[in-house]
Length: 153
Length: 386
Image (cartoon, each protein chain N blue to C red):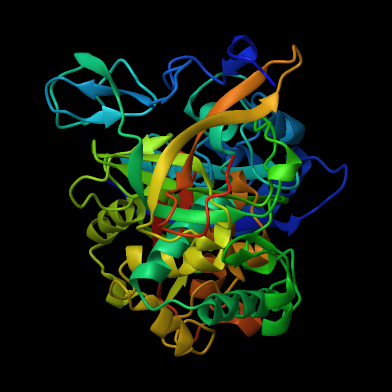
């Protein structure tokens, strides 16, 4: 069983790690409240006069499914997820902070995914890198009880 | 401002061409377009050349093959809106009087399978691939599912679009796929991203297409064909808050009612042309998948929101229907070489408006619209008029 020392995040500043209950990290404009994931140093609302007055916030771990599909083919590099993952869900999850985030979607049965379904954040290994580290990525999974049985690890 | 017209067009059949370079395909298309326009190599005063794949100065290399003569050449890359961007630049040059004869070149030799990130930079495109593996068909399918949840679109209608466009393509000697498919074949093709199957999705490929842009006077003096007026050639990029498939990033802000980029480009084009969707006789649009034809029919205002499936089911969008869409076979039959794609549409539309489209001819076509949507939130809408 891997311990915390060889589990590395897939990118810096994407989510809190290490953490028992990880959260996605985003930037929020202090002037207009526009939220960006991943965090950026600027405000991307063209109507907002503010340029770079942003703070980093933790996004809510729950949201609703905005749009989804079931991908039946192995995506090309730079995706490094294992072929055994295919088919898997992909979609946008709308979070209460006013931002919709694209993500891998997990469900005991991907056929249970529905627009409007309740989703929750998980951080789990995507692949093992050359140095033997487990590379941790975020995903959203169907909230147990709002679809099929929860058998996701 | 002078009215830009298309005096000649050329197109290398889209498809797979082995070791043949897209430079060679572009050169052959330029020769065809110049012959079509009745103009000579040295009559060309400027070139705008579009290609999306890496490799420096494609326009310079092509022009040197035919005879370097010192004219300005601009190379550009705007994803699937690349060809339209080259055309727009040529129209602006002619319109403003900078040049009298300008040539828009689109060329591409795209690898097989999903169109993927080609940059080594860790930009937003890199991260969305790395973290989510979302390909173009994935994005299209996501929006399709959302539409299906809100409106009455069924898989049967998606199949109808695929069958229609392949049927049109079977009549087009410049299309890659010149073979009809049955609904059963579409439904038996492998699922790629639910609900989109392989035969509902366009294929990356290779090809080139060229348009010669000039003034009405020069066209009339040289070309045996009626000049085709470029009534509008408009570009737009994504607006903050616009829907997911336009997104180039890992997130978007669903605020207000930001219009999709295609609608923004279409509104600009209708305004520039002084025309509306009701004036169109024929349309070529970005059927990257069968779903996208539904999506863009509505975004272009060809029908109301939620009305596209019924319009497809009625047969109105097939040859002989009220408003034929993609008489060339569209991307589903031509495949997509992004740099050349919209100039391939322009090639078809010029044949239609001249009355030279043979078995694909839309009777009496006077006004046609060509639309592409490209990655990173680029849309181009061109309106041509006899």
